[in-house]
Amino acid sequence: MELFTMKDLSKFDEVLSVNDLVLILKISRPTVVKMLKKQGMPHFRAGNNYLVTKRGFLEYINSSRARNGKK
Image 1 (tube, rainbow, N blue to C red):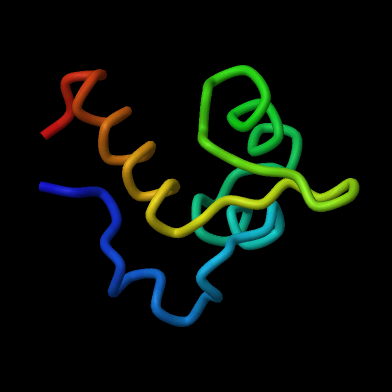
Image 2 (cartoon, rainbow, N blue to C red):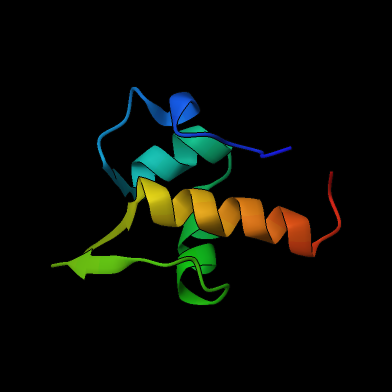
């Protein structure tokens, strides 16, 4: 079972900001930035902003869950 689906993210834009990820994951901003910088969540930069596509986010979260043995 997937942790998140595209439907779950329907109220968000196609490209997610750090603030969006804080709301979605219910974790702190520094933790989100750590996920982007050190844990390999696919992202790109626009100026000083870290941005993530919905598809990249879903693939990362759902594959991370599978790697960690979660059902």
